[in-house]
Image (cartoon, rainbow, N blue to C red; front, side):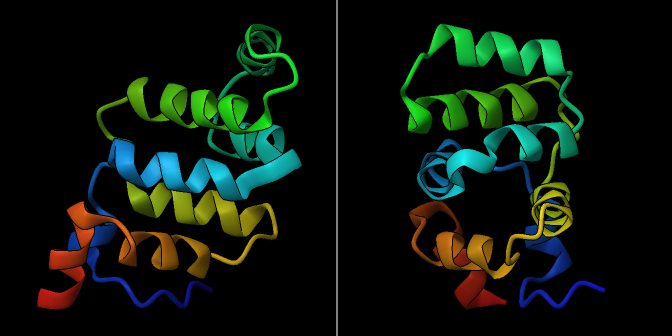
Length: 110
């Protein structure tokens, strides 16, 4: 199952712009698989790719923002679960969060 070092308080937070901007640098060519795992429709993902030809970082960023902004219920937990289903190490998000000013204080407090 999931073996994250993050508390429910953090897992239930809405992902910040800072977090998504750092994560988009680490997704790579798996951006579409992750987008599908996050529940985005293939047509929307294809439109994102069409709008940002050959700029993988921006494609990944737009996919993450599209996912997060479509629903006020988007959480870090949901993102971690999708990454794990894609075969990515969910500790990637923990590493990113530790380098985000907006979450660092929360991680250190808990």
